[in-house]
Length: 192
Image (tube, rainbow, N blue to C red; front, side, top):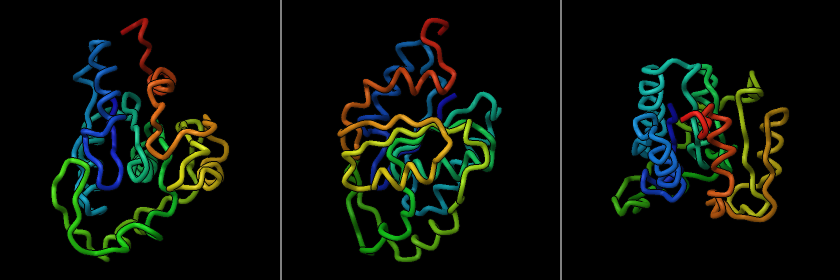
């Protein structure tokens, strides 16, 4: 089972989420992929993903988190003991997200309210160093202009790392890395 966690103001319609969903469907594993629309409140998002993760055996569950979803994935993996793939994950999002309270439009065109207290909700989810580096796979792009890849490398030192020269925050070249991501999640296309 793969639980995909999208980024800030993103949605299940993001490019990477759709690419993963299509790859899983092509392998006949469409029912083993879940990408919920995460609430903008970090507390509410954490409660949602924890409830979903607790429905699955941690040995069978893999998280894939992009940007803020990577931050959530780290928090969740530490709580339930599953694997996590982190795609340009947010490191200290409470320092720069939710700095402009008010109404914003998300990736899917929905209007959402950003509140200043959401930064404190994010701070409450900080995990520090990971306890089992072997359960993590970091994909970090040197061309990410949103999150410094060196911060990602420092946070996930000792974990499996794919440092991508160039690229961007969205990992526009994600399809090239999708087989490696699926393999880390325990999905072998030859056996599916």
